[in-house]
Length: 154
Ligand SMILES: [Mg+2]
Image (cartoon, rainbow, N blue to C red):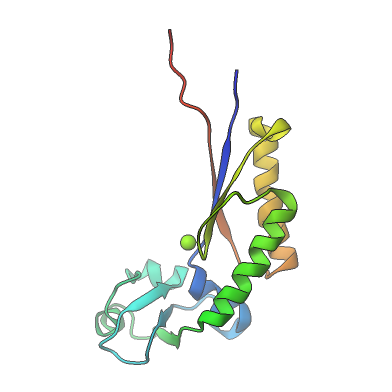
């Protein structure tokens, strides 16, 4: 029987989390990353705390401020996000070859050998999360999922 075959990862609230990583004063607070500081623009990323208030990517800032008057808007720093992308992906590559870079904050790697077993794949996923926290930034989290082949009964 074949086991799991792909591991997918997706950094959580990526741009907003990186802002919270580099500025601890932003942690635990509703943050929206924007392309320019204007109420007529929209959020290009929202922190976990902002999402709890109903703010998401694409929410207009004037609407977001109605939902959450204490919202902190930060002008996006693309170079910084690319820099962290390189560091995070390099860290993951030490544990699992990243076959596919899907976007700045998403990727996938093939599971082979012992990592096709569920317990080993879960341990690998935990190690990836830990390596990012310990070696890149303690505030950075990611979601990880695994898939297996589709079984058919004959
Ligand atoms: Mg993401």
